Picture (cartoon, rainbow over the protein chains, first blue to last red):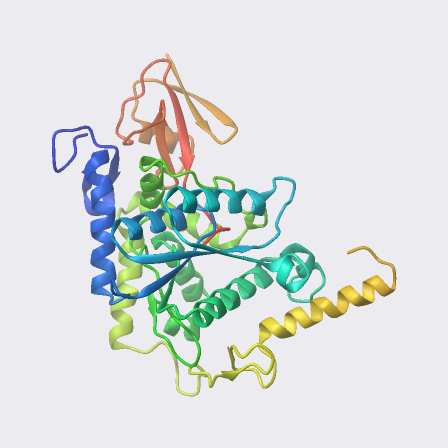
Length: 320
Length: 66
């Protein structure tokens, strides 16, 4: 198969676009399209200070690479979760991220949860009702809270993440399946800032996961190939597999599903009268971050519970 | 006439002469979930498998990073 733009051999065929490109044209196409999305969806400007959540995975590192090539001022934030599970998952992902930042002369902020909160994520999960079965809930809660806090405290204009089309379509699928109308109303590639919440954007939201992976490989970006060990059996991965089955039979189905949803949101509301969507937010009495809860935010309440249980266990001589 | 397809720690033997896409579908591997490579080079899935080919598939689906 030949490249659409030249006679070179194509390295990727994107059926949803009926487009095949060679390596050189593909490595230009991804940044060009990303810039178009940033502009069309009014995500941020070149003068904005951008904080990118990086995990060492292909999407966040590929996005950091693209945004740097486009000339944006992008600092990275890595959150150390303390996940080991026999493969030194967090340590390795941190090393990969640090190496990438150093090689590209980029600023990387590192926040280690165990250093700051006294427990890593798996230990904290085992000590809470919220995380007892698997740590994903407390992990997500902690990451969202920390990302916002660091972005706000350091005066960043926007927080970006490497979420791709497959991520967004899987979330949309789950929200639709369960008709989570409040989540549907809030889902989108850009979330405006409000009440202490920094603006958030997802510049890769229209790329398939296959495309961001291809970009990382062709750019020679070293990324964390192993999945988080706690992702096994995750609903998001199951939904992605279902959507990929659909995509195999109907190229473009995933993209059409998501873009149709965004168009629908422009003209209709997913919530019914009486649904509690626009929560009233006020500062947490401990950390000052916005919360709808009356006193402590969910993050602070969770970590208070973790510390309290640890103290109890230490007093009882129980190893966590 | 055999070609080899590798995905993580699994190895599959398939008959050469068919496209990579056909081979993936026969193996119940979703073409959208992988990127085929040979010798470190990306391939499009219309590539015809040759005898002795060693195709390594890169899995693209993730769920644990952001």
